[in-house]
Each structure stands twice: as structure tokens, then as C-alpha cells.
Image (cartoon, rainbow, N blue to C red; front, side):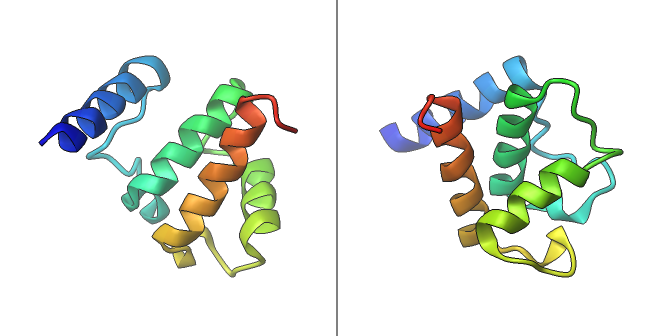
Length: 95
């Protein structure tokens, strides 16, 4: 199916260019959701010095978009889609 090929091509590009590891959570349960991985890749694109060991600014942005939650683990796919859409707008120069 053409859509599946497009998704796989995008995933390959994110792996090569941004180091997104689709099968790896790096010890963070919130990275199980592919949307979270995409949002982190977008964040890393905007802020290359970012590190998973210090997620303070990332968490602040995520919670500003979706509302405060106890942890990132509590976010669902729809939440990560909102975050990704917001960060995508910033990347494209919309904010």
C-alpha cells in the first residue's frame, strides 16, 4: 500500500537524520508511542543540545500544549499528535 511505504520512508528518514530509534524507548516508557518519538525528534531538531537526561524544557512545552499531567507516560497518541502539530508549526516557521 502506498501510504505504508510513505510512512516507512518517513520513519527511515527520521532514523537517519534525527536518530529516532523506533524499537527503542531508551528506558523512558513515554517513548513507546511513535508520536512521542516524533515529537522528541522535532524538539531535538529545534534544540539540538537537548538530552533525554534533562527533559525539563521539553516537558514544559508538552504540558503547555496538552495540559498538565503527572508524567509524560500519561499522554496518549492524540496528545502526542497535538504536540507534534504544534512543534511542526514552529519548525515550518509559523511561530
